[in-house]
Structures are given as C-alpha cells and as structure tokens.
Length: 398
Picture 1 (cartoon, rainbow, N blue to C red):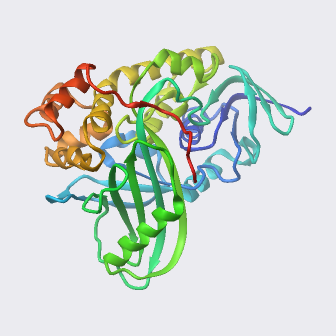
Picture 2: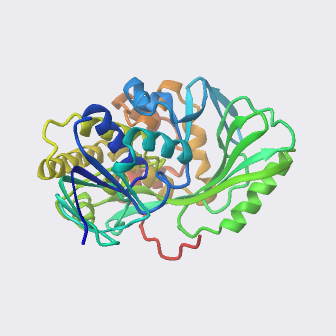
Picture 3: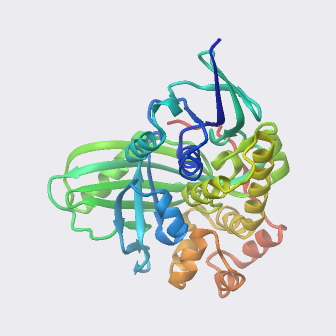
C-alpha cells in the first residue's frame, strides 16, 4: 500500500473542492495540498454562470483567469413581458477551470482518475490502494444523502452550438419562460459566447428527477429552429439534476452525510435553495476557510459545520419560496411566481440571488396579490398547508 502525506487533502475536484484548493494555495503557499478527483478533468463537464453582484471583488479575484465570457447586462422573457437588467453576468467552463487549477496547483498536488473509498478528519483511503495521511481532510464530493430534505428538482440539458450564421444576441437570455410550460416551470437559457456560438439549455423545475436527455435535446432543436438559427456543429453537451430544497432537518442531513470531517460545497448543503446554484457559496466558503487560523482536521470539521448551520438558518426565507413554488402553485403555473419576481427592483433581485435578502426585500417579495392561490400560499408559509415531497433520486434516467 502506498502512503502519501500532506497538510490538507481535498476530496472532489469539482467547483467547491477546486476553489478551496485554489484559495488555500494563494493564501497559504507554504501548505502541501492534495486534490483528489475521480474523473480525469477537474470540474467535470459544466458551464457555470453567475451575476457579478454574487461574489464581489475578492471573489472575482479568486476566479480570475476562469472567465470565458462576461456581459454588462442580461435579459429575461416571460409570457407577459420582457426585461433587460443592467447587472453584469459571467460564465466559466470546466475546461478553463481545469487549466487554471492545474497551473496554480502543479501536477504533484493532483490525483485524478481515482475514487476516495473512505475518509476521516485526517486520513483517506483511495480506490487504487493509496493511503493519505493529512493534517486535515475536506470532503467536497457532492451531495450524499437527500432523505432528510424536501422540495423538488431542477433538471436540464444544455448544448454548446456553432451556428451557420450569427445569432444577433448581444446579451444572455437568463430565462426565456415564454416557451411551452411542460413538466413544471420550464425556461430556456441562452449564452452568446461568440457571434456564431451559443450555449442553449432547456431547464425544468419539476416534481420528478426523471430526465430524458433525448427528449430535451429535441426541444432544444425545436427552440433553435424557431429562432431561425441553423446549427453547423454541436460543440458539447451537458445535463444534470439538482435538488431545489424547500425544507428538511439539518441535523439529520448533516449526520447522514458523514462523520466528523470538514465538508465543502453541496456536500455541506452550501447552495442557493431556490436556484440550486452553488458557485457564489463555493467562492465565499473557500475564501472563509483559507482565512482560518487553525487548519487542522478537527478545527476545520467544526468550522465547516458551524458555517453550514449559519447558511441553513439564513436560507429559511428562500426555502419558504421554494415550498411555495412546489406546493402552492400548479406545475403549469409556476412560471407566474418568477414572472412577478422579475418585475421587482433590480437591486432586490441582485440581493436575492446573492443570498443577501433584507427584511424589506422579504416584505416586498411577499406583498401584494400572490401569483398562487392565497389560501395555498398562506398554508405553505405557515406550515399548515401542503408540503413538498421528500427528495429522492428514484426513477432518474439520464
């Protein structure tokens, strides 16, 4: 059995694990790091996007070199209106993420193509027999157990396309909900990476995690054709299913996700409850962890649990909105909740996505006639009405 030693071992080279490794390398270059990823590429196969207001200057500095596109504005389309918002928007790809991390960390700090079989706060056993002894272990391998959470699902198929002619878009369409509403709240997402290159994603807020990639691919084809775009080449495709959390038992979730080991990213429940997006939280957590004075295994385990608990508490309002979306609105009418939301003040929308919703914001979001039946809305918010289903991946097909 091979043995390796390091100051910090990070399990999972996805978004959360990779950013923790990068933040530690920049803040503490004296530390020896090992980043373990079961795939061959760090970050997998993804396009991640975020608003400039989500992460701030320090966060953008951490992500420096990863951006493949940036826009000063974005648009949303709904059946009743369209709106252009002056908020900056950025995109990152896994390929660029992988390149930046490899350059920053060096090959000696990477172990790819190998799974972590078991871990404790200071030890890891890998699938090919290597045993890692570390000052601290950070588990960033993704969600392990959802049985103690309730809500619904965000599922999607995205394609990066090269077109035969320019598409004419000058800003991303973050939500085009003017499309037919199928399987819950549906919208199409378009990122114009170049004059003749665009990323098109078909997304659903559904009661079921079942995902038929072929069917969603056909709907992307139909959307592209309806806009008059002709595809010259498919440059890539990705798909996924993410939980939209509306409630649950944090203590049970934390206990079921592993022992006394530091956790990061969605493994720690660090994602936005309504959007399921994890990049802003991954950036904030990585920066906070890198500032910790004690980077030992026990100290980081306690830090990550306390951090995740604070995030869960701060996210109560967002979970309530997810509950309203899934339990109070009819599936084909869920878009109305977002249609009303996008009429609100731009700064409020920015704070909402960044997880910094104020008391006045909450009052504004809930004021007026709700876009769902009043009795159901009140029932969900008071806990006396219908509740979202427990989360389970049973039946998923990808």
